[in-house]
Image (cartoon, rainbow over all chains, first blue to last red; front, top):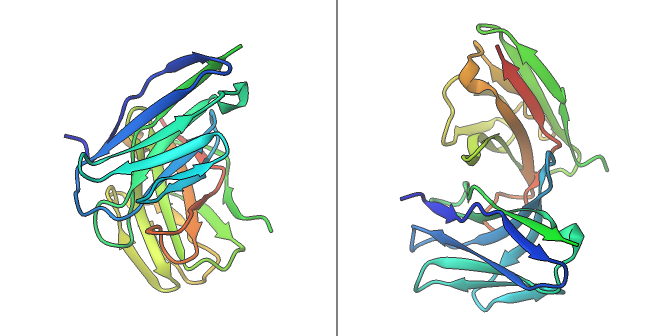
Amino acid sequence: RKEVEQDPGPFNVPEGATVAFNCTYSNSASQSFFWYRQDCRKEPKLLMSVYSSGNEDGRFTAQLNRASQYISLLIRDSKLSDSATYLCVVNMEGYQKVTFGTGTKLQVIP
Amino acid sequence: NAGVTQTPKFQVLKTGQSMTLQCAQDMNHEYMSWYRQDPGMGLRLIHYSVGAGITDQGEVPNGYNVSRSTTEDFPLRLLSAAPSQTSVYFCASSLSGPLYNEQFFGPGTRLTVL
């Protein structure tokens, strides 16, 4: 089993739709969780951290489910500019390393 | 601030050649790291550094060396390039480690080894 697992997609959704991605992780002791966004042939950039209580930033909502060991990202009212690959990041061991998932590709269609 | 810069942007090497990928940051970050990104594999950690003079191995360190003589610079050396090292390489930095801090990435170096 991969340590951090994501559905690669692609998720093809129309503009205005709501879409959700999940990311499962294998280490129950993991402490920190992030979502990064990566545009085609560009570097990853932080989208949002994921807090235990869940957090929201505009149209984006991130949640953590420790019992089932997954994090989720919900995007409401999808825009064409949301088209990208979304990377799940989890610390799997120690304090100096994090593990990236392989990413979920989102394509928002006009 | 330039953030994290990487040179070169593209490089083609022949098997057995050596080269150094440059990485620099101007944010006074203590933590710096190198990742490689391959299709279907995600970003994998090669080496990282928690401060000047301190480096450690990541998930895939074989065939690569690093040094950290200054806070700003963290070069990655390929000792004897192999086709398996064809990849996109990203350098990243964060204030004090990736556990709770955002990592800032450079634009990447696309390396092809023939």
